[in-house]
Image (cartoon, rainbow, N blue to C red):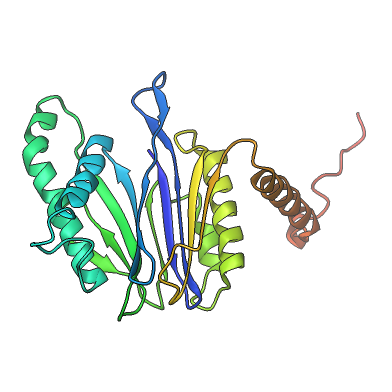
Length: 252
């Protein structure tokens, strides 16, 4: 399992993915699940993946391979992010059609999902969620983020904080808390975390960070968030209808 999240805000975009891959309780490995395509002044595109690792890797590799052929529509000459999402969906279908029947014979799940977002010169920032079947939907101002993988533990903080007008720095903090919450509740998600931050209209991936176990900022965020939650919890009023429920009566 994995956890990936992408935010599309007025100020820019934030992408993050963990690196843990499980093939059983005693087979835990780390594989990068973020792929970037950056041509300064022309396009900045980020792809995040979850699901069957061989399917996702081969689909993105096929997308890259097609990009070497200038005589066909590819990720480097596409004029819109919609085209990019369509290309990736087609690559996913091709790989699943080729490998899926063999995986099914061994009862291996061939499911895979992608988040693809960024900006191409001449159009606005866009973010898409691509399903296992290759079809996709686009993020909006009312729903400015997508998650894939193990989403339920990190979703509450995103729902409470993230809005289209959220500042990029605040969005990065929120994403870090979302990952910390997920990792505390699900061992199938873990460090390192790959994070990319894009400023609107910059047409360059302005900031990328590989967050490992010894990252002091992430450790600080994790500690202070836990302390803050306990402090807020302790300050909540007790329901009056409970009365003196914690009073211990004297022994008879």
